[in-house]
Amino acid sequence: MTAIVIGNASTGRDSSAKNLVKNNFVRGNFPAVLVIENLVPRKLAFPEMNVLLQPSGISGSTVNKEFKTLDELSKMASSMESVAVANGYVQMVSIENTIDIEDANVIQKQLTEVTLVQDMGGVLQPCTITLKSADAGRKIELSTDGGSEYFLVTPDVTTATMLVTYVPERITHAKFTGAINDTITLVS
Image (cartoon, rainbow, N blue to C red; front, side):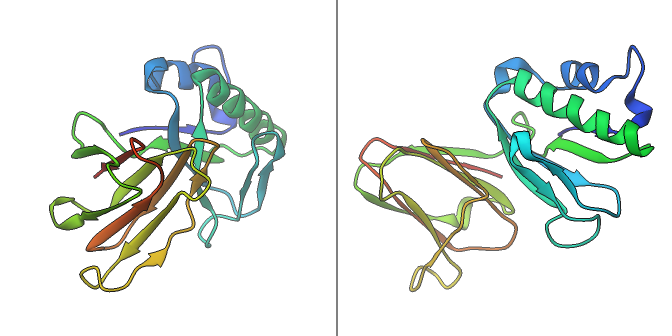
């Protein structure tokens, strides 16, 4: 797991937000979905990155955000640092990659049919589920009762070619709908 904290204490030549990003995240690991958490008791908005964080400690104070490149993350961190300095926040937000790929249990499959059901019994949870698909009917559904009934998931991140959702609680099955040869990845 990699984590940094952005605030006015991160300013300075060696500890600026850009240097924290450069020294803690690897360019080759992008695109990546990172967890951003608000550490202050007020709403924070970063419209240039489509991020709105509710005050610390309440629902919505943490969001998952996809960053396509390390440069995109660096720009966001720099913008956050400017807000922290202007408001005197020593620690304003944390940015972390909660998945350490070296320690992760990764399952990757291709859809061989339009719909694929995955038994989640062998997947440690919590986990992150990704469906790489550009199909218009793509969706992820989850079951907690052995696969009898499924509920549709609202993804944490949606792009033109990917749906990503974090599953914090125990599920028994996941159902993926997309196109043949689309890829699913389960990381726990």
